[in-house]
Image 1 (cartoon, rainbow, N blue to C red):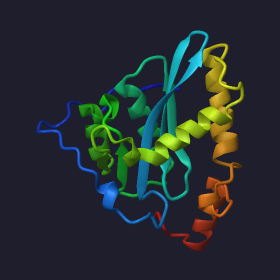
Image 2 (spheres, one colour):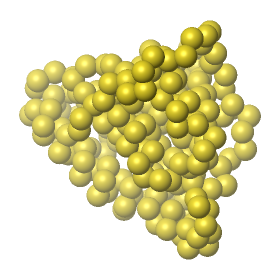
Image 3 (cartoon, rainbow, N blue to C red):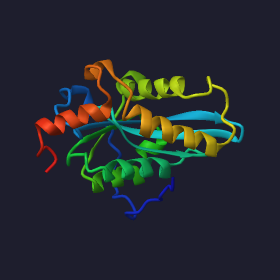
Image 4 (cartoon, helix red, strand yellow):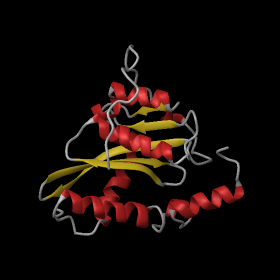
Length: 199
């Protein structure tokens, strides 16, 4: 997947604030209200491949993801852009992550402001604030084919990730927290009952 740079020009000046509105927010009642994001890594015979995901907390669907051979802000921007392109994110939605430099970068803050998303960040050194995203990444690495062995190449890893995320995880993987439904089934059920939720 292509990884964009910072398309909106320089970020506005000012002190970086890192509040955590997700901490006190009620559980989401509709898709696109609360998003979480995290970065993990996969071993390949060419070196580490880094993966960033953007997950909708209501449906557990992975709305955006991208990979890169090195850690940089562009991969986060790409995943956010992909997630926004789904049309399933509400204005004013919470976007939560840890305090890593890719998520706290000026370009990321500026993009979130552009898309009218509220940035939320975990407390310093407190991983439990982003527990669902970290758990999802751990599950992904456990369920990917290969038993944890390095992928033959980055291309092989990307192909495997696409198959897992787009054809299995979002469409077929059942979640106990969703009553045994997959993320897509849960979304479809919601929109059948609330057809104008995102209009």
